[in-house]
Amino acid sequence: MIMDLSKVTIADIHIHSKYSRACSKDLSFENLAKWAKIKGLNLLGTGDFTHPKWLEEIKQLREENGLYYYENFPFVLSGEISLIYTKGRGRRVHLVLVAPSIEVVEKINAYLDTKGRRDYDGRPIFKIDCEEFAKQMIAISQDIELIPAHAWTPWFGIFGSKTGFNSLKEAFGEQEKHIHAIETGMSSDPEMNWKLSFLNNKAIVSFSDSHSFWPFRLGREASIFSKIESYQDLIKQIRENSIVGTIETDPAYGKYHWNGHRACNYYSKENNICPVCGDMLTIGVESRVGEIGNQKIDENKNHKFYFKILPLHELISVSISSGLASKKTWEVYNKMIERFGNEFNILLTASREELMSFDEKLADLILKNRAGKLEVKPGYDGEYGKLIVAGKEIGVEEDEPIKTAQKTLF
Image (tube, rainbow, N blue to C red; front, top):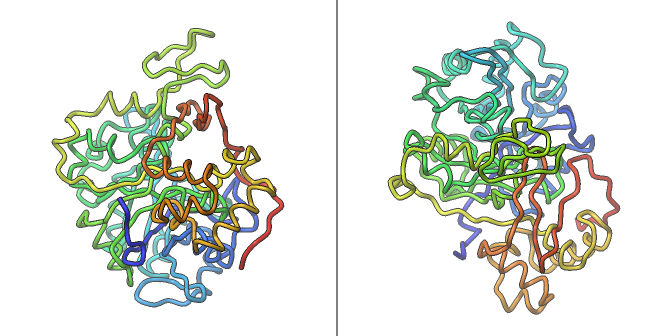
């Protein structure tokens, strides 16, 4: 599908700040806005509005219609909360929060201050039940949006195999009616989520959970909306499930797609026990979907279109046999951005002829990527999946911070 990107808003509203653990210390609104434009994103979340120092920086942005602008680039107020508590068994659930105003954010923070500290990390932890937390948020403002983050991650997803629930109703009780969307996370895609009947009327959204502003992290997953010019435009599309679609990585690329045991270098689509050491495997997302899925895909009539692509840096790295963040990879990337404008234009809309005129080998990878025809060895137990080209496995570098020499364009 070729899409006119000028007629939509591509949004990544689940990101983090420099005040979250394992995040780039160079995260700033200047860098986020700059690299979002290079990526082709039109809207970002602020991330981490619960952190006092980051909130002070958020307050420097210019507000208009519930969106907060750094120069001419819009942000929406967002953050992530970790709820760790006991309900039947130990639960660990991450939720994305989206808020309409600084006033509402301050009310959220005042409530959280009655439950514990929020100054030690951008994603603070609280011992609050999901149902109670949702009830309190809606009491603060009906315009707060709560989205279960990376819904299938084994330890911190609402449906995760380690600490999750079997349905939204089980997690949120009477407050389930206020949950309008779930985030796929890297190890699942919309098609996998269509197998759950209780998600039939929920929006399936995707965001990056990025820990840096680099374009191989920022926007690696994103959601496509009709043009957004206000906070209400965003919330209306989520609540009415009228989003255009999503941009996903291949779910096999995610760290928890298959069952596995990293310590023994073993993974499996079906086995639950490690044959090397005899321990229980970390049950991956594909198995977990199979466990609680209760309908055929075509029984869900609310399918949205989605792209299944890997970031451009990954493709360049494979094409020239250089590191993901190497100087050579950056040189090719910058030349492509200079010619095509932004990364999503390259990955999603540039014609075969335009791409071939730049580099035939790389063009072939981009076009296969666009068509979802690249082979990926599944990730497991915290290990990313690996792209397979000509029988050779190509792995990504570890998470942020990534130290790199680079030449910027703007």
